[in-house]
Image 1 (cartoon, helix red, strand yellow):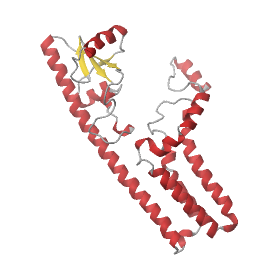
Image 2 (cartoon, rainbow, N blue to C red):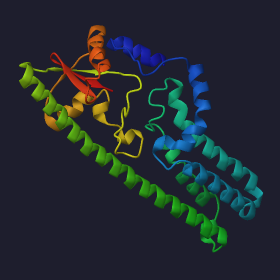
Image 3 (cartoon, one colour):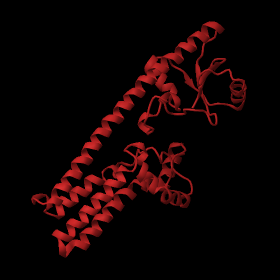
Image 4 (cartoon, rainbow, N blue to C red):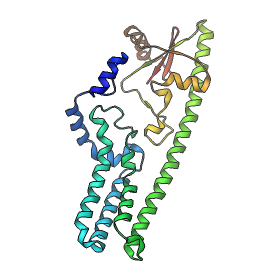
Length: 274
């Protein structure tokens, strides 16, 4: 934290993503561990990760006490500690700031947990060399988990690809609207700004998309909208900060019910609701 501030001072920049009350962050993390494990940031089917962890732990403990009796207790403790460390390590960076807490960007250690557990079983026991019922059950759990993980990955990529298609379509519609506005009012729209409206429906996500993870967030409905529009259409807008006067002018139109979409041109500025 000190190093970040020192570098910021030397470069003349301010770090806004790291900071806050570390004790509040710790309390927040501990009250949200279970929801994160259950929901997995919408990157894995709900509850399924927890079910696999519990099932694999039960299998492992049974194997330890039936095949490595002298080291059974030690191996069981190590196995459980491996789970705890793998899961908790995904929360370490959030001690300094809660930005992107629910996005899954830094949750890779949770995703690696199952793989680490099976590696531990392979290294600590000879169960995979035997032809026992528990061996086949263990292999089945591993294969079943791998299948679901692969299927889920394909599903997420398909959803992400669909978002790209929807983004491209919406970007084209926005530019078409801007061009019609420019022709009608004899003005060139050169700026773009973001407006936040409370309780505005469908923020960040397309209604056509079932998943609600960071992989399917619409770039057009985020602060990066100007870059997304430029990528798909080539149209360049200058990003400007929303001033109180601009917000007042926008809210008058919004409250009057004149907005047909989540964007509107006022003067030379394109207002985007995010």
